Amino acid sequence: NAGVTQTPKFQVLKTGQSMTLQCAQDMNHNSMYWYRQDPGMGLRLIYYSASEGTTDKGEVPNGYNVSRLNKREFSLRLESAAPSQTSVYFCASSGSGQSSYNEQFFGPGTRLTVL
Amino acid sequence: GDSVTQMEGPVTLSEEAFLTINCTYTATGYPSLFWYVQYPGEGLQLLLKATKADDKGSNKGFEATYRKETTSFHLEKGSVQVSDSAVYFCALTRPAQKLVFGQGTRLTINP
Image (cartoon, rainbow over all chains, first blue to last red; front, side, top):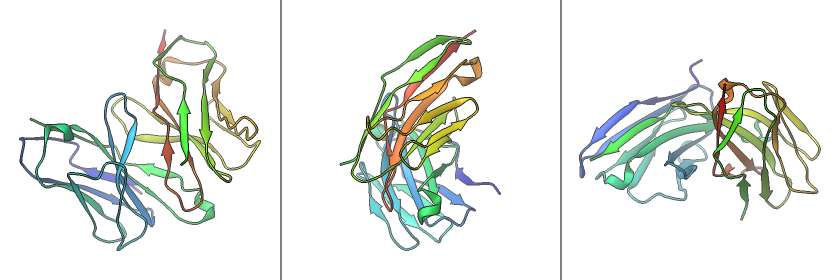
């Protein structure tokens, strides 16, 4: 039981390049999330998926797209990277229903630098 | 909307000192409350939680009590260790709603 896994762990891009961050969970959770964490700013929600087949914008969706490929996988794509997207990206998942209390489980993060 | 306010950091203590990190919230209804911990270079881990008023969450010597009358969920530990150095996040959620995080408090424990 690996929990939430993310790839890659580190990435350096040049401005204008594109890339996809991958996330997978093996807990049979319905909901998945992408956050970014910048120094001194806590976590900000980029996009989330409440269930397979649905996605919704969070606080800071501009410059990103997401795909909920199936129940396990939720990817985040940067179409044209900008230095302002230098950050640490975390994927999370949670179950649904009262018993789960919406507790979220986090992956180890992807550290992205855009030059 | 819902919000969480945490004590501003950074907080620096000596080993074996008493720790309190304040957290207050604004939410309608009856949220569940959480403390998450982030060790250097890692993702967030759930530290403890409380789902109704007067519940006390506890784990690894940390405790927090859900106080509805003061809308607070302060984190406490009686004797901190160097290994407790981390960033601590208070958070809340309501049924079918997303997690709302505080801004995080960086804690450093000196030997």
